[in-house]
Length: 512
Image (tube, rainbow, N blue to C red):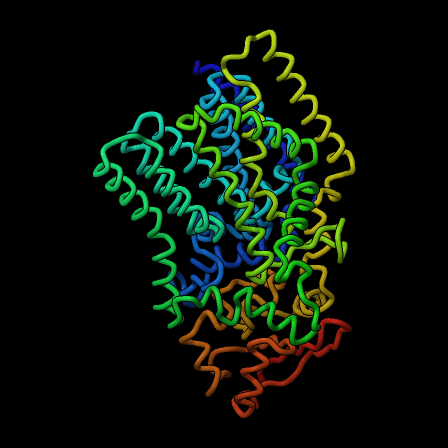
């Protein structure tokens, strides 16, 4: 492929990425998600903490996104605005879009097919929004696309560099999001089957790939066993999805609609895809899948594309059996929650339409087909984007669910503004994600459960270590103060409120 074509495509991608990041940031939409704000806290704490470095790596969220964002999050402005993560997500999106272009073009042996795959990414408004946020999906999608691209190159050349590169990308993916773990067996099977080489070489290369890629989950199990004395702490610990769901059932008796029902889980996930990616893109992807099957004899060239379909069964089974919630506006309870899970299917939905433009098609057929596909994707882009940026499915979820609109958090923020004097605060980890960035409190001036060696000191003489306490009903600080009430006799309540639906909070200050 001519270098000038790659350069032109890269320029278009960079312009789209930069404009979309500025567009969403300027409208105050890029840092709304509670998860995103918490990711920025995790990244910031790597350097800004009483116990910086390794002790700040937790149990539930995989560490790579925090580690990548940490150098940027050292900057106060980039941390408080979420741009430390937004810049990483935008860079990941830009590389992903370019790799999809190359995959489409190389698998189909023509630039037009690459343009179709590229359009599937850059003409998806919800993906453009997600690329402006400090969320893990864009980086995870990058590793998945890079791994598949390099596996495609390996299928064509058999080069060790491509195989090891694919394994390294898969390894990084498994330390970014758990759905990448599910891909590993399928990718390993692909490595084993794709090239007709002697059995000894086949087993050796498969073992190398599995060993490198599979070391990510193994390291995470070892980390949880060492740090929390439970290798499955991320799965069944107190902050896991299982524990959160058990607490919800105990307090509200409201089960997730998809719990235990694979058929309903599939329906919810399909509705999610319609909302965040679009019906026309889905129909083009189905058409492309049919075209892919008609070229089954070219499996050696196009087979790697099937790995992009793996997130589909993963999320369906997770919704049914792994305590993972998904709410879509078109189905009960008609609200927005975790819609971004659908974006994991974007590489498949972007790439598969490219198979309707195989290299053997003449230019007089390929040209009108390209125009037709781009017209449909452009129409879908317009119909979705014309409702306004805050009405995009993934963006609206952030608007509706942002923790920073919580009356409790706002009450705490308003009290501390103008009163906080830089002294150390005892606070539950992750409980008040908006308080520290909005008030401007450094994490090294807080003690949480993550600072275990200091947290245990709170049982005896907390007045030696902290000046302030933020206590929320049922949080870790509340449990600590109920268990050791005599230790906190030197603290007095300076603010207290009970807010309907959110419970009570107290702010204490040490008596002079």
